[in-house]
Every structure is written in C-alpha cells, then in structure tokens.
Length: 90
Image (cartoon, rainbow, N blue to C red):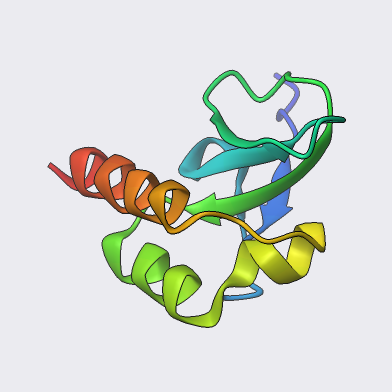
C-alpha cells in the first residue's frame, strides 16, 4: 500500500511545521477583514496558527497577525482566537 503524504504548514507564531489538521487557518479577505477559516478554503491571504492557548496568547502579545497581514487587527479577534484555542484544548 502506498503511504499518503501529510500536508504540512508553518505556524506563524512558533515557526514550526505541523500537519495541516493540527492548525487553524486565519484569513484576510479583500475588504481587510480577518477571520478564522475552519474549512481552510476561504478566499484571501491565509496564515496558520496552532490550536493551543499558549500559542494564541503569544500571538496576541506579539500582535503576530498585524505583522503577517500588514493591517491593524482588532483585539476582539485575538480574544476570539483565545476562545477557539481554549475550546480545542478541552
């Protein structure tokens, strides 16, 4: 049987490669709206982050998505990201 290739993506906070299923995609669309993309197929510029509370806290502290997307991202989005990571850990 042929082994399947596991798609890998880089976590923009830790700069480590992980299997795509262990990460969540965050997307910026043409209207400069930033949102979590659970399907991984939304149109726009995407970046991946691990589903861990500590990683989400580090992203909020360093304003990682502000740098990645070159726009000012609301604190409300980072709080939503923390909530999503916290829910995934349970």
